[in-house]
Length: 395
Image (cartoon, one colour):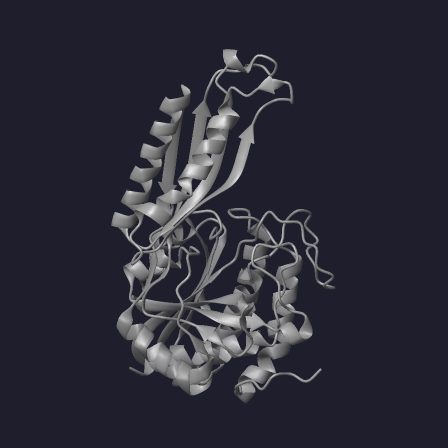
């Protein structure tokens, strides 16, 4: 089947493509969970050392960093790639499918690492002409929490001091040859929550003697769907999702308690505060009506990801010239990304790189056992990443 027309890549990127694919496939085949990326770390450190970069070292327990030092003075640009996988059993038929039971790169972090390694080799090859430096950060625990902060605590933004932070996320939703980026809030802040409803257990044949926690939870779940639709202003954005409900022991026992876990996604603190307040008020009212009690615990693991307007304007200009104006999408997501922690500390830009190709049957979803990408996106990521880095170093 004919490939779609794609923007060109330089000859140096074409030369790097076989190793780019080999890195991605090896990393895809050997995924590791957050804070457990020891083999991944060893592979990255070995590859960075083979390339010949300076300041190759472990960071953030299971992450890695390295530096390309240019032959001429200039700023330092940071390029970040996340490295952890998900607790998902792979169901693809790829020849390089995961060999680790129940663990899969179902969000494209293997592609992020491979692109970063190729960029490291590309800039190392031309380092004598480089004005400034490029700091590569391979961050653990994006899917958990704390990975970005741990990298910063280990000094990746200093020595040399980083001026601009950049990165990309592969996308199974965006067509190959397109990208999604926009200034301002681009990813949401994730707030994980746990609600425990406590009633009074008893025999299923005598419900009048009990307070059925499952019935209370059912009313709460239905009512909580109105938090966003009826309390958050239409001009704002928020998501409240309950993804898990646990209750009961067996069919003839009325459940004493029920536990719900879920997530809230928001772009601003006032909307988050409103969503939490309304959730508490609804839970209090429903539990009071049924004679139950509740606890509501919540934790926001990272801030919203906010793309710097000036940096993003430059990246958008480069994108129009490379991908073409008709291949740029500007739609923020309610997904979460702790690249946001880097972008709080330094101005920068983070964007989605399209890797969906329905003509070839590549149309999976993120965090799905059948997640796949079109590998033709990887050289595009290297080429466009190089153009962005070169632009900010040239300034």
